[in-house]
Length: 227
Image 1 (cartoon, rainbow, N blue to C red):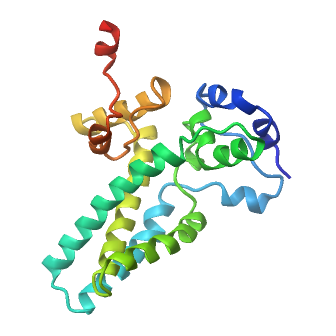
Image 2 (cartoon, rainbow, N blue to C red):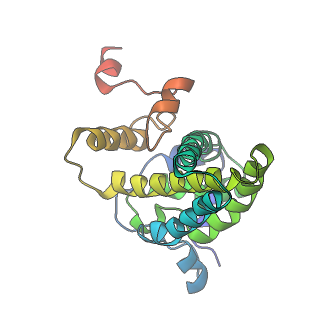
């Protein structure tokens, strides 16, 4: 059933070095023999906002219907987006870049994030598949419920989901867009630096905020050259 994974799992400790030797091409390897399962691993970038923005609107409007004013709801949504930026950093640093060496550890890591580092320009495996996102939404929803009131929970969750949409669309743009203004151009350089120069630094995608907070901000190429 599996093609590429059979080899990846057997790499053992060599997997970590292998995965950070990127192959720059627009298409990645086939994952599954089954066309159905293969289809589920590929997602066009525009599918993310198409599916999830209406869901965001529903959750946010739920808080409004429960009595919150628009300014209150907007503030809660912003808090949700801010929380997402920390989740984004944490997942990328501690899950997506976990060090593995066992057969199943390497295989699962390759599925989750390793393939993206091996084939960083594969545009169909860059954003997160909606089916997987839907599954992950369940524990995140329950987690928000633990710390929020019933009327605040939908807007916080909707804000977090909006943050996720912004992250995935931004991530795609950083790989395939051609920014002309300074901010997105610097962000693209920052992220590609994570792929091609220092893979254990620069875990932020939408910003470098948490890299600065937690000391994982990579040195600039000029500073590294002086050292």
